[in-house]
Every structure is written in C-alpha cells, then in structure tokens.
Amino acid sequence: MKKAFSILAAVAAVLCVAACRQNVLPTVEGRVVDATIHSVTVETPEGESVVVSTLGTNPMLVPGVLPGDEVSIAYEVLPELDVLRAVQLDILTPSAYRLLPGIWRDCSDADEVGLVLAEDGSARAVGLAGLTLQDWSLDGEDLVLTSVDPDGKAPSQTLLYRIERLDIDSLVVKPAEAGRRLAFSRQR
Image (cartoon, rainbow, N blue to C red; front, top):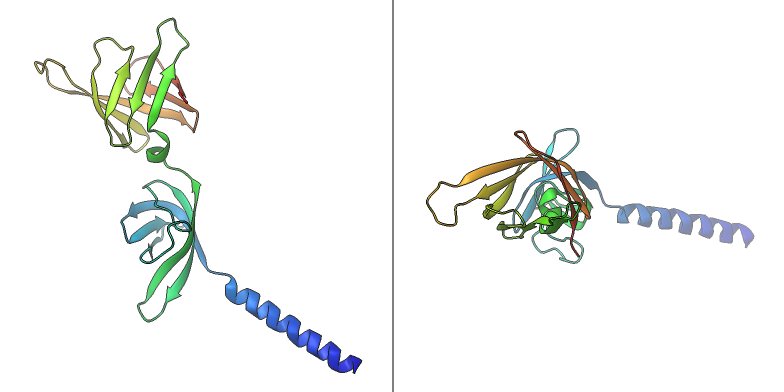
C-alpha cells in the first residue's frame, strides 16, 4: 500500500511539473521600434526584429506601447497562422515619448521659466520672453522645439536640445549650439 501511494505521489509530482512547464510562455525582450493597433515590433539586444500580434488580446495585460519603450512580451505561438500573439506585455523602461509630456519648471533663478510639452506634440514656453513655441518632437536623444513668430513676419526656427537626463521628475537639456544647460522639474 505504501509503495502504491509512493508511486502515485511520484506520478502526481511529474504531472504537476509537466503542467507547470506548459504554463511557462516564451518571452521576447527589447526596444519597441514600431507599434500599430494590431502589432508591436521589438528589436532585441541581439539586433533581431520580432513582430508580435496584439490582435484580440486583453488590453489590461497587453497595454499600448510607444516607440522607444523597453518591453518584455510573453507570447503564444499560433501555428495555424505562423504568428506570435502577445499574452502579457510589461513596459520595463518607458520611452522619452512617454516621459516628456507635462509641465516642466526651472525655479532656480529669480525668474521662473518652463516648458509645457503636450501629448499631442504642441508646446508652449513659460517665462521666456520673445519665445513662442509651436510644437515639440524627438530626434534620437534630441528634443526638437519649433519656435514661431506670433506676428507671422519671421520664419519658424528649430531649436535643438540634447537631453542629458530624463526621468519621471527631472529633465536636463543643453542647447546643441552654445548656450546654458537648463534643468527642469516636473510640476505636479
């Protein structure tokens, strides 16, 4: 009786291990290089490009991503379609596109200056006399601001700032040309 019970316990343990192994999904990690409504393209650290479908996934487990996000995607293989489909997506490191929108203030001088960078790409300067911003974008590690003449008499100008530090609470930029470094804190 003890021997039969031991064998049954051993078989149950093997089945449990086999069942657990079947629940472990393959994953891919890397940087998002393209994202559409139905797929995410990830570049792995080895330089491989992997496309994972997001069609029919749970948006709570597979949230939207932006180019530059560092992600880990657990996926299943749909062999009949030869497609990888996301089951869970975790954003490991958010991209600058995700971190930059907001109100940034530099209160270190007597005059408060700042930037308002909206999610729609529009921009506004605060406390910077004579500077009327129209929009912002990213070019690699550079923040690109477009300045316009409010009277429409002068052509627009492109202002290029190298992002030296960016996190949830701080933004440090330095003009690509000569100029002083600007350190901003996010206004809450």
